[in-house]
Image (cartoon, rainbow, N blue to C red; front, side):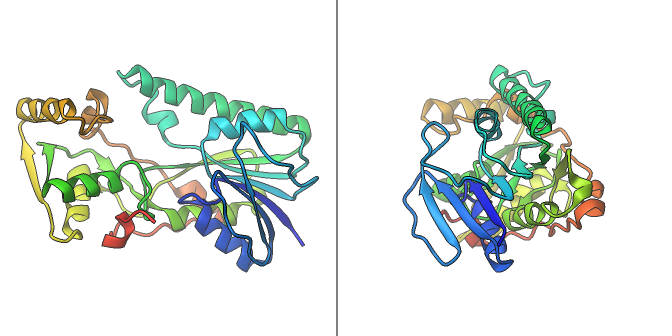
Amino acid sequence: MRHALVFGASGQIGQPLLGRLRRDGWWITAVSREEQNDAPGLHWLRGDFAQLPELPARVEAIFSCGPLDGFANWYARSRLPASRIVAFGSTSVDTKRGSSDPEERDVATRLREAEALLYAEAAERDAAVTVLRPTLVYGAGRDATLSRIAEMAQRWGRFVLPRNATGLRQPVHVDDLAAAAFACVSAPVSHGRSYALPGGETLSYRDMIARVLAVLEPPPKLIELPSPLFNLALLAAQAGGHATGLGVAAVRRMRNDLVFDDAPARADFGYAPRPFRPERAMFDSR
């Protein structure tokens, strides 16, 4: 029986990935920060990269569904034998590289260095690595963007955007990401490669937000303001402790296209993401 070690197994991508692995007959050792209950073919360990319990002596595959830098640093220290590694990164490695926000540039740097470290360490061990880079993740109510927007819009009964928030986006569902990780683990052509994983539809930032608001009950109102008024509204919200994660660079990107090509992933392991058809339950935390 094939044995997989899954980090971030209780997270928004890890949970649907566990389901696919179990249905395919894998034995799974899953790691989570919180206590979890074992199930047939599934054994949970509680811990994180700073303090892990005893791991299996050997596994066929390791999946990382959490922060890439933490995983890469652990992998560099670990001697756990595994011939196949699949790890999630982010398209932020490209989109935030030239950001005016130093914290965002730091995110891109850490992602880039983590990928390089992972590939270098795997090469020394003759292991095959694939890095998957999602775009804007949604679907489990646990993402930091659309679910957060839905929560704020419901609380206030409205959501404010700057006019001309026309930058293109490709939101991707967590189930499609889990399917990609499951598919590429047995696709030799994906060894040693990184793949962008956008969603199956490209739409403007404004239309993406409008679709989210439309499925909420009752639907909050979308308000579009000229940039000077929006900036004042944003400053007022931040002064009140709201929208603290929305900086100047993030607002500027609302007008920029963040579009990625999924053709390599489609060709190499049959990636087939769904169009953006949000439902209310997709933004409820579980």
